[in-house]
Image (cartoon, rainbow, N blue to C red; front, side, top):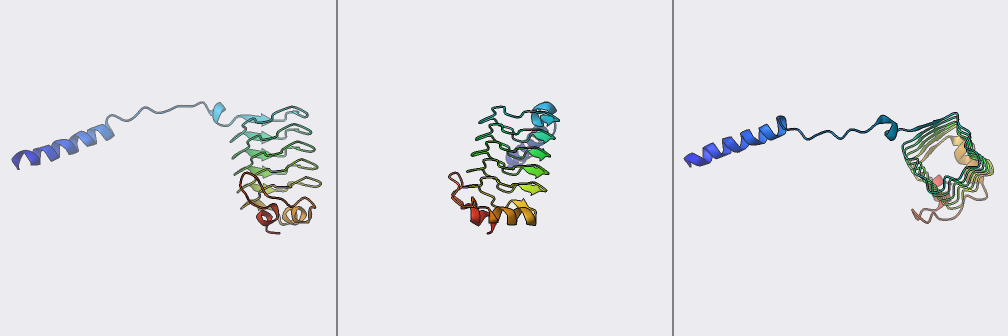
Length: 169
């Protein structure tokens, strides 16, 4: 019993020493690799199919007629980006912040916009067949515009959610 008392004190001391004095080394990463910024760029017509733009910042970027099929924009900050006539088939915009952007006549078939925050964006003539907008926050007019679309149909092959259901039509 006498040694048990000392053993518990020694174990507590060594545990405290390990936690307080010998911290694990920090994993440093450049801010540039965390949030690369695309600002005031003309990238129209470029091929970015399958590229990962997750957590990147886009501001005033022209991506008209660009091929962005299966590109990932997870958690991206997208402000005033022109996706007019862009191929965004199967693109993933989960958790993205999309403000004042144009998706006019864009191919958004099978795209995922789960929990995306979209304000003041235009979807006139966009093909949203199979797109998933589950828990996405849209302006009222955007939501109504998308629900009236002839292409607000189909089931997303990735999430299994119907487009009209995800929009609350």
